[in-house]
Amino acid sequence: MVRYSFFRSRTFLALVAAVLGAAVVASVGMAGLWWTTVNTDGNNVRLRVVQNTAGNFDSGWHMHPGLIVVSVQKGTVSFTDGASCKTKIYTAGDSFIEDPYSPGRAVALGEFNWTATYIIPYGEPLAIPVATNPCPSP
Image 1 (cartoon, rainbow, N blue to C red):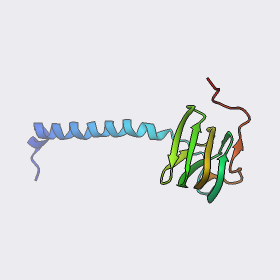
Image 2: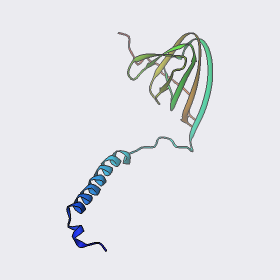
Image 3: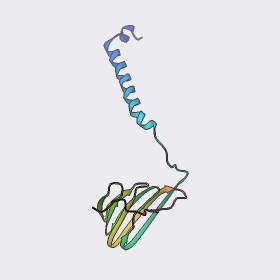
Image 4: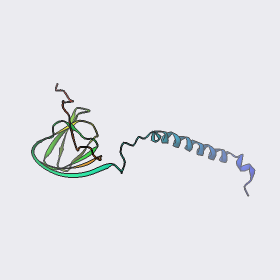
């Protein structure tokens, strides 16, 4: 039998304060997740994995309607992100992600082998050409 003095003790008050504090922290953490927007779901997503080989490759400015994961098997490619206008160099063994609807351009000199994994909405094209260079030359 629990004695009523326990409910008036400092231990009980500390326990209640800890539980209430944890509840507040959890609710604050969950608030950010509460406003999630689902753009696509498993019922309308197309997954396509393509292995490519090219010589002196230039993708031109383009964007994708979904997430693209690129894995370099051979050669070197420079990828320019049109959102930040920063260029990074990737070599065999490296991978990078192209964000949805963000313009980009990949350029490789010599033989270039890569695998592209497309996760795009069903019915959308794999790539959309971008007419103008989003990164003006200095």
